[in-house]
Length: 114
Image 1: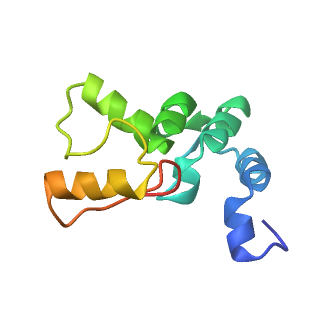
Image 2: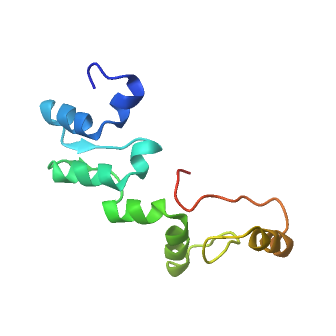
């Protein structure tokens, strides 16, 4: 990322691939957050002939969607906390969930970090 601001350099997939290739790197670990949650990064690393240290691009994509991730966990018989089968779309649904399960409750976007 020469000449790029730090955050832009950190997130520049083409630059990361270029630096890895120029330095005979054979594997790339995405670190924590940001790039670790981007299936296009995993795919770019693999397509560049490098080893991606982490889940496959399809798994990264599936886990990025909290609804799909929850469904996959249920199918794999992974213990989960109470939640909904799909996105909550109304205030009434949210209130009903709170009444049924009590507080505190965390609401998260289906897509987005964390």
